[in-house]
Image 1: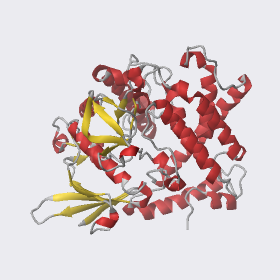
Image 2: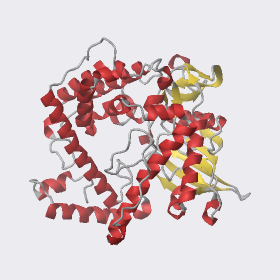
Image 3: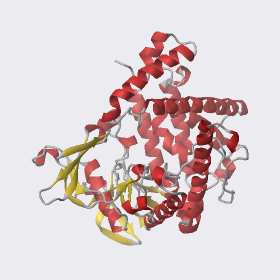
Amino acid sequence: MVKLAEGSYNRVFLISLDNSREIIARIKTPHAGPSHLVTASEVATMQFVRKLGIPTPAILDWSSQAGENPAGAEYIIMEKAAGVELSTVWSKLSEAQRDGFLARWVTLEKALMARLSGGYGSLYYKGDVDSKQTRDLYVNGVLEPEFVLGPSVERQFWSGERLDMDLDRGPWKSPQAYSLAIANNAKQWLNDFAVRPAEFGIFDPPERVQHPHLHLALLGQFAAVAPFLVPEDQQLIRPILWPGDVHTNNVFVSEGCLSGEDISITSVIDWQHLAVLPLYLQAAVPALFEYYGRRPLPAGDSEQLLSLPEDFDTLDEEDQIQVRDDIEQFNRCLIYRRVCAGLIPEYYRALVLPTHRLRFFPVKFASHTWDNKFIPLRDLLSQIYQNWRVIYPGDVPCPIHFTEEESRTYHLEALEWQNEVDARASLDRLIGVSDEDGWVANEEYEEAIARNARVMELYIENVMEGKSADVVRRTWPYRPS
């Protein structure tokens, strides 16, 4: 039994049996969320997507009751994922193979577009959740005999102090109820736990906005418009289950791709913390294909793919790498949208909905205003006011109001704050941090500690921005010991 990895939410072990078979055992960490529910929902979700034809490891045994098994912990024992991790081969794939992978991924997404109905929430086996906390699930109009919808295990409902709070976690009958639950839960957390830090760090939100009453007022504005942000088109609000964190570490592909064979997807892992939600709130370009550069993406899929600039050969090697990577990721995002338009037009329609940004991101940001989403949410709400008749063409006037001066100011502050967010992301990349919790792989830990100390001292020497060296050291995101 060998420990393979430990992340924020799971410890993963490789078990070699005496018949030469290898299997995987996963034990969730306390940080993963509520006992029983997280494990029970992940097992049900994996079994459900397997029924839809998604290649995911078969579960051999599991327990969500730590006090009732010999291990003394919740666990899932599953087959070892077939194939090789995409992260280990992606850089070696030809352009044709990468395009082939993208097409196969969208085909996989198409399988997830099964016609679900009954409400919104996380999946469970019947009997694993109190029937008073469930809603019936229907697949293609037929009552699902094995699975039900129950409380959501999304992280926003369980992180930090929320784990022990009495919150509305569903399941919900409507998208409106889901959005209002997010607003009310966020207000409850703010009232009970929001405390201004004694000292603000260089990447913390501005001091002027970190007052609980401002956040409560902003959430009140969000709650006022939230019911109107739900599309009237019933196809855009139909429930779907969607993978939430697609990257090269949780997708496995055929080994033959390294010798030039056609690539196939052999396994998809990490189905933790997912929920069945309205289509318009699930539609997003996967991180694997998303474009994060400065070029504006076209509204549709008719834009021509980019080519290398005419002066490419005159650039130095480092600039050539940056330009090539930027163009490749831009094109990959466009190709993803084009393939979606052809294979899953209903999903594509939600993805490129003209008002998608104003309907999607306020719901995603509302739980996290105290962390770092106050400024972007305020900007979005002012844009909703400005575009009210496009979002809601009925006779109801917009229930919130912003002056033109406020809208201009809030938008400029949002752009400035995005620069801060980008700077923090660059810092994490320099140090080697993999997620917002500061996680790094064991074998990279000592080097990450050293890089962190070097980067902090470089910041003190070259940036500072009016803060003393002592303040920077005390409030640095990752404090060197």
